[in-house]
Image 1 (cartoon, rainbow, N blue to C red):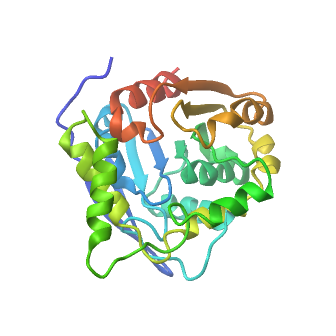
Image 2 (image 1 turned 90 degrees about the vertical axis):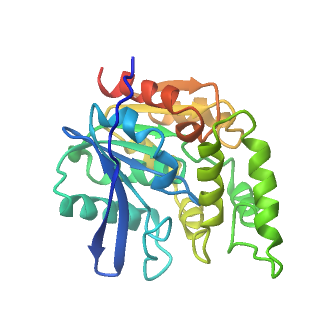
Image 3 (image 1 turned 30 degrees about the vertical axis):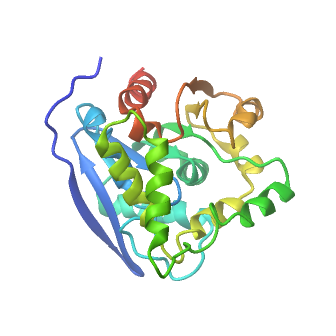
Length: 269
């Protein structure tokens, strides 16, 4: 069982040649590195970090161009995001580590495990992005909800529209859950969508079979975009374990105990 403790979550920045990368961290011991989905940041993990930090040195990085990390100089591909991840961890003096990737962050984690498996003790891919075909990728590029710069109304009505939409998704949840969710959605910037574009350009079907580290493939039942690919993804990562949880793709925000207990059950086994 997870014991809740008063654990301080600290924040910091790492200087890169092109700008700064922001991160949140807590705990000590073996490093547990977490990467997030596009349009979110390390802030969406602040409810779960304390639950993991009694077991690990937890580090949640804001992907370049998202959260409080600065934009990379150009549109990056997933290899560039993964390479930068290792370089940031070098600066933080992290050698080997456990890696948990969520959505876009799962794609980055997948590539990281392919290009430098010797540094990764165990890998968890939560909601690994998959696509039926090229047409499905193009369809996502046509959706302003997922793709492109944020829609900003002169009268500020985009704030109230998002407020109402997110409020309806957080019925019955703690107020802090809604506040974090809203802040994350409203932090979307002109180039934030480049994280999604990088995923859309990534050939995950050829990279997933190259993963050699112990891997847990996790999905949330409400993740209607990627749940249909569970069996195929498990086939591509033949040595992996599979876990499907009842809940949302934002489980680390909305049900942090279940998310943390599932991770700890695998990482500490």
